[in-house]
Image 1 (cartoon, one colour):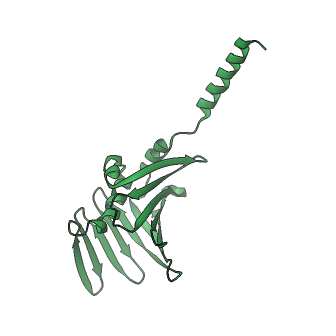
Image 2: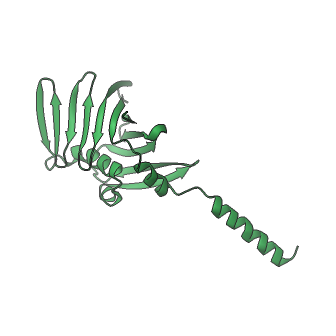
Image 3: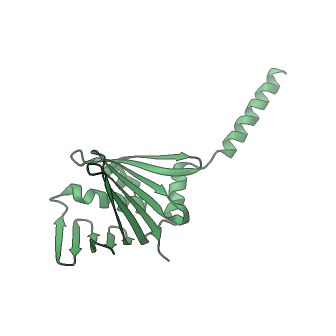
Length: 185
């Protein structure tokens, strides 16, 4: 085979590979944002590594531009409502408001979730080191929060079938939380 034919076959194979390559993780994330659940139900599992036990919670959620609201239906029934600079905690027998300027770690998770669901990658970059990866045609986002004293080592966002999402929060000491967000009907 001549050098020209080899070069031509090589170029043909490269062009076929480029055309067949899957879309980037960023493109997949941006497409997911158009159908991301901003209101619906959630199921949360909290695992305590020290005790080796897990608790499950269910409820309703709503995510707006600078607000995230979680309403727990089963014990402990209550509501967490993040409004940018405050975290409002409402339980059946008491209410409490946390000023996030006094406790920045408490608001960081809600700020990250808000940035994730609004596609605000500039804000997200200020809050956490993140990496968008794609494997087998599915994207996921890995985040490492910037607050050093916080015990969260990693946050993982993965899309789910039907436009939902799985948010996994891993702590340094082995505890973790998995929050599955499902689109409302």
